Image (cartoon, rainbow, N blue to C red; front, top):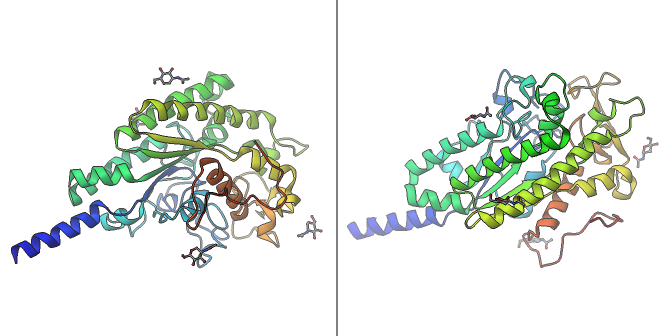
Length: 361
Ligand SMILES: *[C@@H]1O[C@H](CO)[C@@H](O)[C@H](O)[C@H]1NC(C)=O
Ligand SMILES: *[C@@H]1O[C@H](CO)[C@@H](O)[C@H](O)[C@H]1NC(C)=O
Ligand SMILES: *[C@@H]1O[C@H](CO)[C@@H](O)[C@H](O)[C@H]1NC(C)=O
Ligand SMILES: *[C@@H]1O[C@H](CO)[C@@H](O)[C@H](O)[C@H]1NC(C)=O
């Protein structure tokens, strides 16, 4: 009997030890799946219709989109479960062990100050702090050795940075906006990000991807800053500068940190192409939000009294800030292609690019 019990325990613990590969996601509104909806004082919440209209039961679920996030799609395509929001009521050690955790929070940034205008949000350092708490819970549940293995095998996604520009550096109410030059600010972001990624490495992260920024000068919120409605050139240049520096940083970290497989993937060029040639990708609009409140802009004006475009799959932007589900699919496919992820039934062939897409990079 005793040996039977020991065998059972062994089987159980092997199951846990060799358990699932899960994801831990750190990010902003582009990856939030419900954290901010639990931050009751936050001014950035996707908790009203029409958010989520093309997802599950169609009710708001915390995603700042009509449908899926880029991280949802990449996880689905690579066979990883979708991690619940850290603040989700369903979260428990058992759930974490099979699904991981998503710490992403709308308005959050690499810098602590970023997004303070939204009152409540988790900045990246706060998200890492919450992750440390999660690690302690799991260690207590399955023991230190098994926990170390679990966290080393997990996949890590880091997707932050646009708020550090849109809701910090580019707003004169923030001191960073007058303290730094454009390149000085990017350097400051990189040194902060470097420390954060090294901290995650020290906590066990070995397989990690960082998503780059898109042409954020072309989000509807930026376009209305000029009477011409054109993309903001300086904002786009900042995104390109960020991507270039982050790509170098990740290469370097991957070489210098022990056993680190750290990668950088962005979809800037493809999204730029989509915005310039929407019809080639099956879109009919690439400059205004599908969900909008007439001419009353900017700000988050996708609210219950807003009107929706007739065909959501024809719009690149869902609201003033965020791409639609369809655009996220293109972004996710590009990142999958660049990082060489295999799809579930994949051969080694690269993922198909959208119909008639002009080739990029
Ligand atoms: C940012 O916040 C973290 C904790 O969340 C803190 O440890 C760190 O010192 C802060 N950094 C700055 C520059 O304020
Ligand atoms: C790479 O990282 C090392 C160690 O952190 C640092 O000394 C070096 O300057 C970095 N190189 C580049 C190109 O960033
Ligand atoms: C594209 O939008 C124009 C008006 O902006 C409309 O007349 C046309 O029917 C739309 N095409 C599709 C395929 O939705
Ligand atoms: C992928 O594999 C699953 C299960 O093996 C199968 O049901 C599905 O049809 C396959 N999809 C493609 C595109 O081959």
